[in-house]
Amino acid sequence: HRKLIDRLHRYGGPALVLWGGRDAMVPVSHGEAYAAGLRGARLEIMPDCGHSPHLEAPAEAAERVLAFLKG
Image (tube, rainbow, N blue to C red; front, side):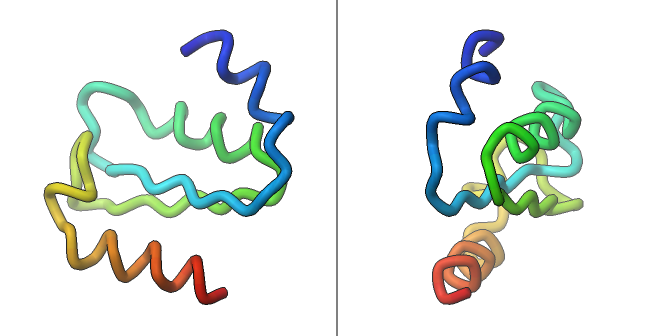
């Protein structure tokens, strides 16, 4: 969403951007842009996943989210 990138700075909380490294719909560069636009965000790429890492590798995605929340 082109207008979203200009609004990301409004959010000041912690953020995890979880992205599939093999996403054929939306390139990793978009995940990088989201992470850059969110202050203090962390980008984690799941290299063997496509567009839906939470569905393709739910256990790994959950581990990453839980680790982020604990950190």
